[in-house]
Amino acid sequence: MSAFSRGSLLRYQFAVNLSSKTPHIFSRSSLQHDRLFSAAPIFRIARKTSKLPLSTPKVLQQTKPSYNPVSSSSATTNNFVSYAHVLSHKLHPTVLYEAPSHTALMVASYSTTLFCFSWASVTYWNSVQNAPAGLPFWVPHVFTLFSSIVFLGGLYVMRAPWGLIRRVTALPKSMQVATGNKTAAAASDLQIEIELKRAFPLPIFPARKIYVSPAQLSLPSPLSAPIDKVFTPAQQRAMQKENELLRQKELEYERTHLLTQPFRHMSRGAFSFFKEMKRMFHNEGFARLSVDGRKYKLDIADGWALDNGRALDRLIGRKIGV
Image (cartoon, rainbow, N blue to C red; front, side, top):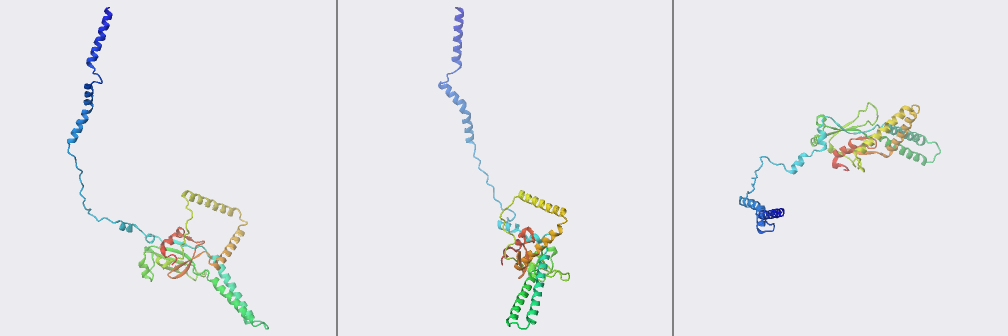
């Protein structure tokens, strides 16, 4: 009985303590107390910040610079440097074009000329000057016509090696040669040296050199061919490696086959001779370079040009086709 009363008393005390210390969660006082506890600091901070004066941004005074700014047009004009200006300020001459050997062309031209002149002279002497008796009257006239045609053909093929350009060089300011044309020299800082080949390969005939400015040059068409395909650096290295391997194979073949080497050289010489005879009649593979109104020939088939001819095209500029 005493135990039962002790337990009931403990339960009563526990219930009284809970009801007096913990408020009801849905009572009005607890809601107001929780709202004031959570929102009061936020409203208090907002009230303080609203009383602070608003700071106005400072406007920087635009002051005029102490220097004169360069306009975009003048900047682009000053930064542009022409290709002729770059070549004129180098310390050494720049080779723009160099021709290959034209020995086969000269041999083919002069041998054909000698044959034409000999045939025309012998035919005219035997058939016109010393014509046999009893020939019809029109036979000497026909042979005269044939002899004249062959003689004129000899003159035509004889002029094939004339006017060939051996080398084109760009001379800087420090290496220019004084010429009589002062107007052209003053118009450009760059001087072009054009060295011609000897018409007759004899040492008594010196090589002729012409000094002009780029403004005095003109071409009928650009030297550089349009690029159909652009190769990447890796493809270019692969192509160079392949060409080097082919060249090494050819050299190895030349070293290991010595008995047939003279016949191979004779075959190459004969092929080159007939090729030059074709070029002699048709002027195939030559470009006409006009130098101050006079025409000279550039070998674009076998010659070497700086940057595949783009260097000369950049110097001549818009005068191509004039």
